[in-house]
Image 1: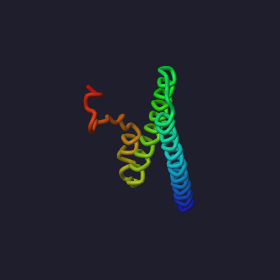
Image 2: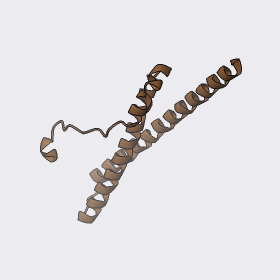
Image 3: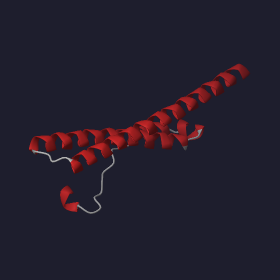
Image 4: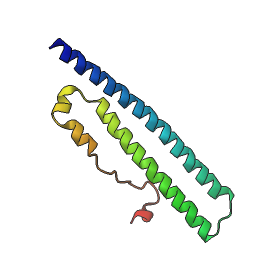
Length: 115
């Protein structure tokens, strides 16, 4: 029985380390996405664009923002996992967290863009 307990604890420790490493990786990826967005904003600011170039920049920005949203959703799930204990995992909260729905954005100023 003691061997099973040691094995279980070892497995939990490894899983915890893997989750921490994954979180660090996601934080790095989020930083890279933020830097890409800043580069795109500055390119748009400092370069005159025709319609085709403007579309390409808008599409690149859209793709990068979607990538960033996916990373943030993963980080939110990891944040929920850190708050779990064995009882909450057994009660199915881990599965519920992994099914986190897509967030909706509530406009702050330019509400007419979302009508």
